[in-house]
Length: 149
Image 1: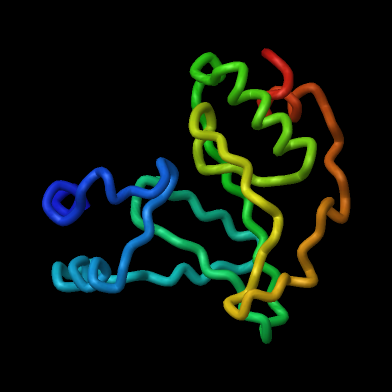
Image 2: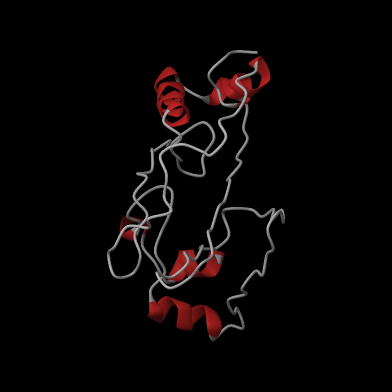
């Protein structure tokens, strides 16, 4: 990966700090060096732990699928690294049941709820609140960055 970033790309081609799309040509570059995609076959309740700095992506169910994809991304860093503005964005996302980027203390961008299929239609299983709301304990609020330790 370091060789790819050093020789095959330019820093100004990165669209956002949180992610970068890999083109078909770039995938061919990886595959020509023996780096092949691996599909993770997970069952409900499985825990997948990985370093998000590695090339990765998630696939949404198709419009014809009866599968619901639910993920929780957990990212940790010392709370002292977060600015007041970052904590406000995290609070807004938490209170609205929205997701953010993979970053815990920086580059917190709230992700919109609208999950679309390849044909542009909205997933009717998408909801604005969980079926069961969490118990808002002091510990939960601390872990979410809404309450200081």
